[in-house]
Length: 288
Image (cartoon, rainbow, N blue to C red):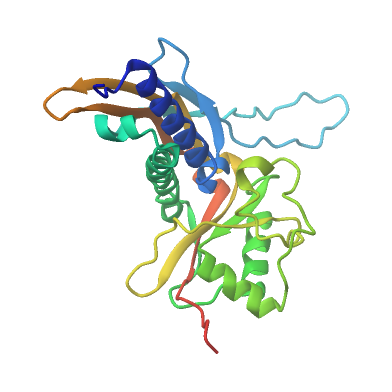
C-alpha cells in the first residue's frame, strides 16, 4: 500500500506545531508581558496614544478671580505594527511517521524563536529610557536596587513599578542580600501570574516593587547588561495579528511549507516613567 501524507495528517501535524508555538512564545517573553498592551483594530493603520502633563492647583483668595490657566500639555505617540515570521518544512516522510513529539519539538523551536524576537525587541528599549541608573562593572546589590527604587518613586515613575534584569545580575542581588527565593510570595496583584510566574524571583517585593529575571537580556563583551526599573506604562506593545499560519505544498521537496507570521510593534510610550539599570551580569561562581 502506498504511504501518503494525507490532508488530515497534515492538519494534525500543523495543529500540534501551532499549539506548541503559541504556548511557548506567550510564556517565554516576560519583558513583553510587563508592558502596556494595545490591539490594532481591523482596518486601522495605527493607534495614537495621548500623554498629558501635570497641572498645578493654586491657593485662592475669596472674592478674587482665578488668574492662572493650566495647560493640558498633551502629546501623542503613534503605535504601528510590522510583520515578523519564520518557515518550517514538514516533509511527507515526517508526517507519515506521525511522531507527535517531533511536531511538539518543532513548535517549541519556533515558539522560542518568536519569544526571543519579541523579548529582545522590548529589552532593546531599556537603554533609551530617559535615565540610566547603575554603571558598568557595578553589582546589582540590594543596596543599589533600593537606591534605584527610591529614585523611581522620587521621580514619580508610576504606581505599577517593576524591576527586571539578567539572571546573573539577579543572582548577585540574591547573594548580596543573603535571601532565599521561594514560592512563598506569588506574583503580585496586577501582573499576569500565568505569563510571569516562571520569571518572578519569588521574594517579597522590595519596597513594594517586584523583581523579575529574563535570560533573553543581552550581555555585552564586558559582562554588563541593561535591565530596567519602570512603570507598566513606560513601554507598550501593539498587536495587530497574533501568530498566523499558512501552508503550501512543495512537490519537488516532497513536503509542505508551514509559514508562521505575527504582526506587532513595541514602543517607548513614556521614557520618563522608566530607567535603564546598567549592572554587571558576569557568570556567577558555581563551583566554589
